[in-house]
Image (cartoon, rainbow, N blue to C red; front, side, top):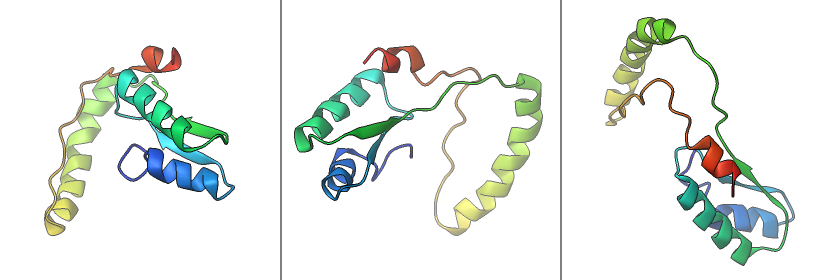
Length: 103
């Protein structure tokens, strides 16, 4: 959903198989998203979707109170798998929403 394997190649293959492929655009810049859309358009002439994160309102006090415990619970599982948790984005990040909609 947010990236990785959900890029132009996979979305193009899904479209080519007759289904509706989706391009993951969360956590990408608007320019990176536009480049991947152009690449996907070069791979297929079929319809496809683009998965965006819709910014929403959240209470900073609730995030400050709940997020550390959530990260701690995830941290044990991440360590068991040999992974590290990424940094928490600052409150209010809009994932370049307005710029993405302009493409």
